Image 1 (cartoon, rainbow, N blue to C red):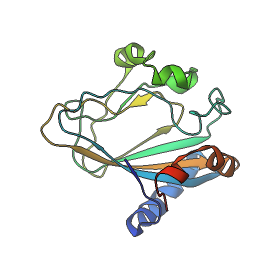
Image 2: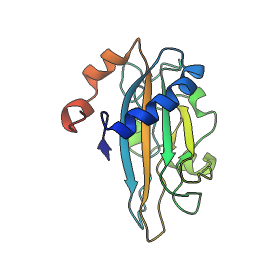
Image 3: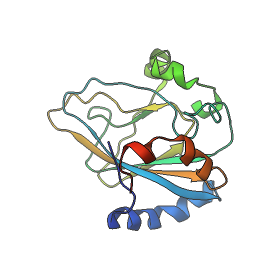
Length: 171
């Protein structure tokens, strides 16, 4: 994963997505973006909820506080590591520490869907949705671009508790 914010391509993509995101989260503000690559023949699975809900202060807050967008950089489907997510799981509470310990893996595997994502398609969802990168059985890596939006009322608070701004040369 590589956090990128000020790349001209990211800025242009964010301008296109912003009006769509604001239909669902009117106070949305662009928070961060990542280039994520699921390596070939990876078996990694890590169902989790995302920022801001991965922090104790927001873990059980059921408000729509963030939207994550995944843009597929190659054709993906359930056979080629398309992101898995559990529909309606934002209505449940998932303790983030138990996510990291793998407690929800079986629930996730029993209930997830993996949308077909032709290259350039966008999947966006509430950050409280239980989701995971999926194992990639193919001999090619699966790249994706992630853009993350947060409610502007919490963005400065989240930046103070989120270590991506210190550890990943985000700017």
